[in-house]
Image 1 (spheres, rainbow, N blue to C red):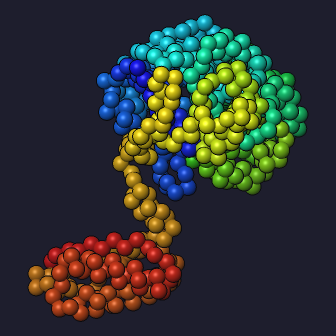
Image 2: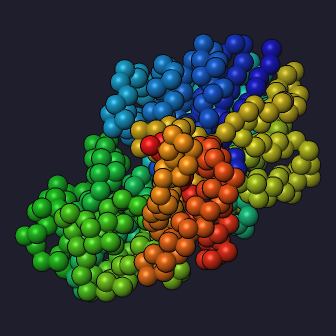
Length: 548
């Protein structure tokens, strides 16, 4: 018997969580999340894990188990389920999020098994899962004690040691301790806060902080947080009620998630408190709170469109207030958030955000003492840090050394790395090949580094299209035509292009007969050099040869 743990993604990018457990010819996936494009991925909507290994071995796959409802844990599941057909296990709120997501992506026929984090245990192939509640920034977040043919394995993607969060369903330390009453082979757990001393604060106190800021709002009050942070929305609703303001949820992602959470009792409010955006027009602006999606400044989100003045139903005005209860945590999100904040401030909005240190946000990830507390509860033989990048994994390794005096049992895994467990021992296996899979519109994986490189050039340097006409006698028919976009200012462009056309004609004709392929290469090479000498820029050259 043996057990293979594979980190297909979710170790170096903070997002794209996807882990595989494989034993006795059976394979189960835990989490399947998306990542977000970086600044060198123009036009890309999402980054998803590479499913090649799973699809190649799909006859072994017996199910997907989901730990929580954030996009970096569930967002890629519709893409995986287009290639494989297996049941999914999730806690009640997460199951509702998944139903909505599958409907959005047109994924049909998926069996979703709902488990109770407090009492359920369930079998998936060769594995028995014992879920337990953990505290994170979305309700129904779970860790798992997994009985495998090699022993008990703890998988705790995110947690902090807060037993009394908003909503009252915090980490179940007693159950974790009970499940760890036997020898634990390995703990795979959250490392994102491994550089931060102490414990991560609880969230209950945030409501008063938000209230103390919000009560100064003179006109419309806007607030934003990550769209699955139901506990924060509860606090925002409570603050609005205290201020005598009606609440409008703006943005489909927030509306659907709040609707699901309200149905299950995870967010509570009087039915007369929440109104539609159309109904809000009947009230004075100082009697309304808008809770808006798009806290990371995502292009196209409700908050982004409001900042751009392009939202179809909501405009901000001088004297409005916006409260950010979010941190620019995902990679590359700060630039987008800063952009939105600047646009709103320029419109006269009083924006309260992360750089002002007003204590309006707290992380859902545990800090050093939270992480060590999990070590002490579980007492595993081996450790695998997950959910963070390289620096966080190495900080986690130092915490293991601080706790046990021995960090030799820590495996730091990059995408595709895996650990083989057999007879109580562990060794790192050969890496499985993985790649970035980019989603743009309906295209999945059809954009690569070459396309992104071209987009970067087009975005920063522009392009010049060259039309070259060649006759049947292999001679040029008139001068080439050159059209440029995004390259140089119009007053400079015309004389520059006229000069380029004359020079290019001589270059093409200097060898006598004109060959189509040679003309194409000469045009590209010569114009790249010529334009750089004249302007210091390197536009993309697009030669088009026409035989006349």
